[in-house]
Amino acid sequence: MAVKVKSAADVAAKWAQVTPGRQQYYASETPAAASDWEKNTTAAKAAFQAAVTAGNIGDMFAGGVKKAGAAKYARKVTEIGVNRFGAGVTAAVQDMQSGISPMLETIAAQTLPARQPRGSAANLQRVQVIADALHKKRLALRAAGA
Image (cartoon, rainbow, N blue to C red; front, side):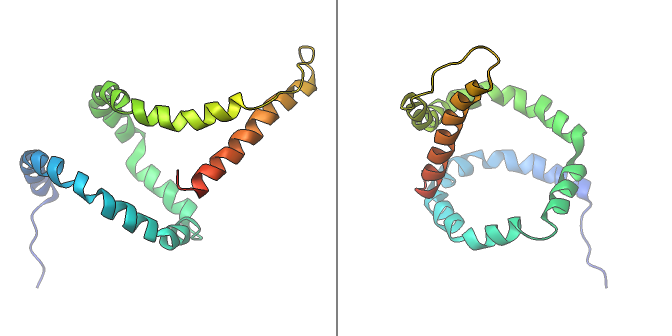
């Protein structure tokens, strides 16, 4: 005997009607889950490594992108992203500042080789000093969990 299920349209309509009313629950319960999220996500290190190194991961990634498609991307940007953009930036100021601060400090601590005439390949060494320092800093921060 087949299992009787509602149509996807009916399920989506009910979800759209009921879920917005759960905003207060989301506001009260989600922050409390932060410590569990961090603990469980950190514990999933091996599973993450296995997933991102699976032989078919590239195909799965590309398949997911194709399934979603450019039309969905554009629709979500237009219908949701544009309205949330400003508030998202405002909410992220502290995170942006704390994230960029170690990088700016790293750049400020570098001593660059003397600038050479315009077009000189030696000028790329100036860029390389910054790139190497930032890469080293990024790896150190990630290893430290920052």
